[in-house]
Length: 232
Image (spheres, rainbow, N blue to C red):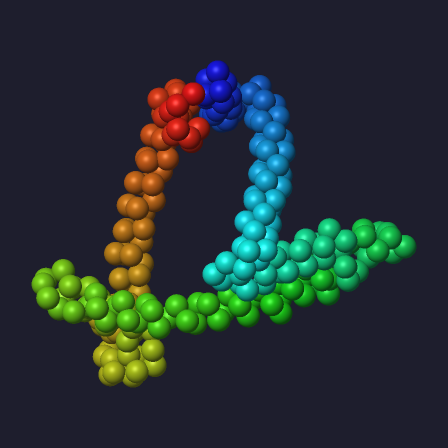
């Protein structure tokens, strides 16, 4: 029963969401299901936050390896939660100037806005700037012309990189307007608009077919891996 009831709920919910696209009366059921999904998502956030706190508190209490990072994680977590729940620094909405909590927690000038703008955004930018060096190192190893596929990859990357720079534009600026598609910027545009788009669409189609297949298996009860172990 512990596995049958969740499988039935998943199957019924999935069927309702599918029928809502074809049968107008089922849209009310869809709205009800979406409300329940929101409630479950909120519960999942609470469970996830509790699990995060317990895990890192245990590391800090026993001073395990990397406990300093756990302490920073806990401090950042609690500061963000408190600032968000209390709407610290949030300006009052124009309709309710006497109620400081009436504004949105993401309004400009608020505590959460400040944390995102001046803490989160710089951290994200720093992380991606560091990743650029790893990407360059990986590209150097991947672009070695060992075979035909690697040579095509190297040539395409070389054209796109040059086509995005001033040097690429200057190198082919002598070509007439009628041959603009053969310039480095023109070739870059063709590669990005034709070949890259075609590849992205193929990947998206494959992902969509995979999602549809997995969804049908879950709705029909053929795939119950999301319930954990097969042991009851």
